[in-house]
Length: 313
Image (cartoon, rainbow, N blue to C red; front, top):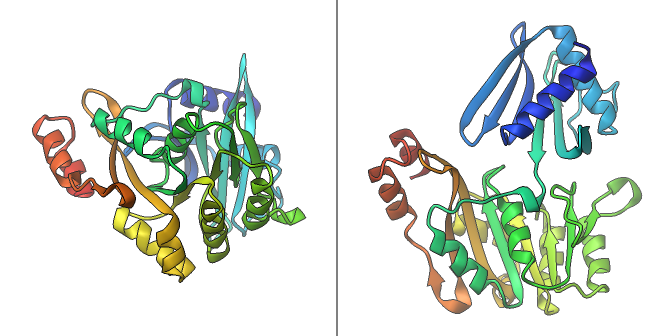
């Protein structure tokens, strides 16, 4: 099997099994491919060093990365051709102190083919209802927890949607999707300013990473736009603290912050991967403080393991 056939086989299998991530990594002198769905690791496959390095080089080339660079972190995204379809992939590459590279490939599925299971179904209906008004809505959670999918699903009810991402993850033909490109000066801040001239009903910001992007998101919300944005944080309270630390001006944040939604994916016995949410909508005086109660209920029902319960408590 040549490298193209091998990569086709791996991506096809990962897609069919609805995997979230594929790892190509070196452990000591051994190379392997490993797939991940939620907290479970599946489909381990041993590779020779030559196979692993050829696979990494192939994906670097397809993702317009620097093929000769083995020291710096590199990021990319591609639409990988499979028989009868394209699979959207996000690539992340890093080299260790020995200049041995490892790659993580995130599988991104079209919104029309993505099903989200909510472990407490009433949570989604409430959030859909409470995100109809204008303002800034922050979505947080672990990497791969479905934040972007949830934002996209909610945005479809809001009218004309424009997204700004780095990179574009879910391809949605009904949205206008812009991609950050530092090489030509297309930063989050600049694209947010330009986006407002197009008067979107919903503006999606892929990730608030720094003060500049946070302030731009707040300015957009203060103009009367509905803004959805992701933030890396571990709870509702931590999300608000993160934004306060970034912007400094708490009064402007308070004026526009309409809601905070935190999401985790849990591996359950009946539904497979399911989303559990926590949220706060200040103007509605709605706070979901039942995270621990919901976890305990899922444990008592036998849907999650004790290990999962302890980890998420």
